[in-house]
Figure 1 (cartoon, rainbow, N blue to C red):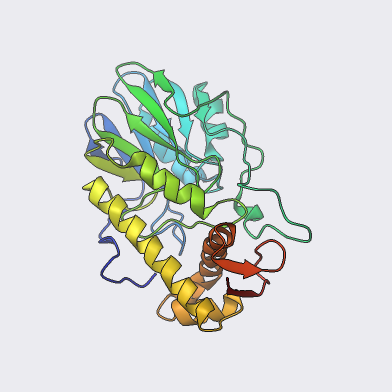
Figure 2: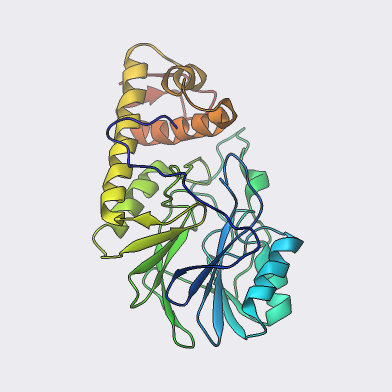
Length: 306
């Protein structure tokens, strides 16, 4: 997305080191899966926590090479828990194969769900990206802690990008595994019906002030000075909201027209995601009485200022 002065300072300075474990914090290794795309950056980050009996966070997509790299990095040590932040196909599916190899419990996000039911006639454009067969041995809720061998991991419910999204704190280490909620390289995709803008903004508020020194995200490099970055993300979304309101006020009635005007400097491959982001903002604006439309907010809807 194009940046303005209110945006956080995004950084795309990242070396994936495919297949090689990289130490990113005390007793934390990062392994990046080679599944790069416009939406995953260089690929999905998996994290190995602990020294003796381990935890793995977000094993990633079904990828034999990445499974082999994780197995090699584990070095025959027992794995007690596999934490899953949310049920998108680039994060959760490999948990099942890793469980078969290690006997670990799958914990964290429960079954995939949307932020709201589908409207009449609506098709979920992100349905193919969802891991509908994910099943946790133990779904975690807000503030719940799982104790392991020399480590403890606490869950924070952070819906927005996905309705069941969780961030995980490494207790006592000031480290938060922020998955796709907060990333240093780009803003998170918030796309209805899987995600909701009001939920996303509330989740930013949920994390601010918790005192974490660093975020280790699901894609790209670490987020440093997280509270300042959260404030930048909030300002960025508010700026986007103002831009959408301005376009509606000027007579842009369709999401397609708004995207063409607001995201003119954005990679065209991301215009579909941008349309869903605009829809997420419009859903919120309609619910707050600032924009009007006939029926529920929809990609094909017609919008006007309230």
